Image 1 (cartoon, rainbow, N blue to C red):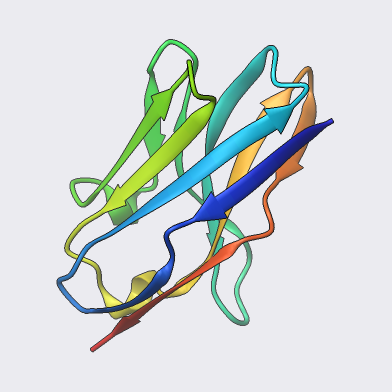
Image 2: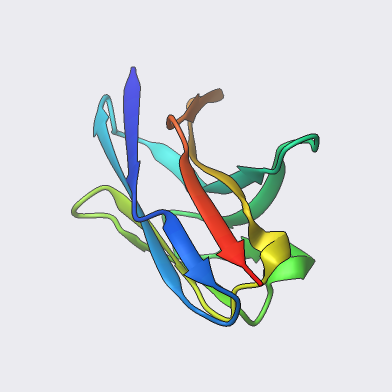
Length: 115
């Protein structure tokens, strides 16, 4: 089993920044990839960004150039730096990882961007 604990959400004005963190614990060997999804009210959960053990990244088109994902393999932690936030970025952000074909999710952290 893998446990994921997020932190760093909150309320910010449009144009502001937030940094999300997610720490993995438990059976963390061979976790790959790690990343973030988000879900806004009334919408499906969508990919935000993923990062592999080797550092390869994948971003949703809507966040390219504004969000940066990074990973500390030694600390089993993944980060999401969010800049130039927009009201449409408002959502519950979920940490994600895959281990040996199984998906694991954090409990979510709310990000609210006011206009």
